[in-house]
Image (tube, rainbow, N blue to C red; front, side, top):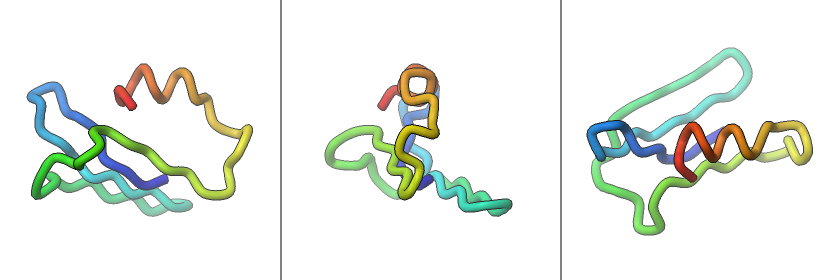
Length: 57
């Protein structure tokens, strides 16, 4: 899973998660299209509605 999520303070965090490895860092700038998450190879396996509610994407 990769993407940009909006924090409670309005800034964005870049998120990367693969297997047992995860990375979070403050985004240099807000993404042009707003919050977004991309999950490759996980069609039908993620709780889409819950992720949208949690991350605002």
